[in-house]
Image (cartoon, rainbow, N blue to C red):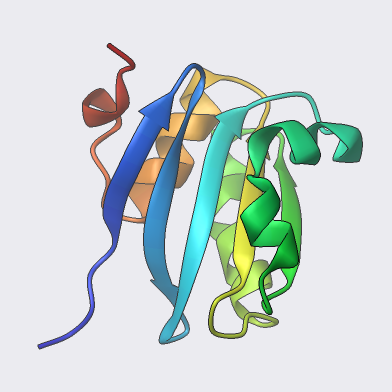
Length: 110
C-alpha cells in the first residue's frame, strides 16, 4: 500500500499535515502568514527543532505558485524533515493543501 498524506491537526489560520514528499515522511505546517522567518518559532513546536530532520521554509505568494514551491522543496527533502509553507492568503493556503490532496474545507478551526 502506498503512503498517504493526511491532516494531523488544525489551528487558527492553518493546518499540520503528515506528508510524503519524494517518498520521504515529513511533517508540514501550512499557514496564512507574511513571509517572515521569525514567525516559524511561533508555528513549529520546539520538539521539531530538536528533532534530527531539517526545517524548510517556503513562502508561497499566490495559488499559482503552490505546485512549483512543493516541487522545489521536494528536491531537497529528507525523511523526518519539517516543511513550513507561509501562505500570503487563504486562497494560497487552500491551494497548497489541495496539492497534497487535503480538502481545504476540512481544515476549519472549530
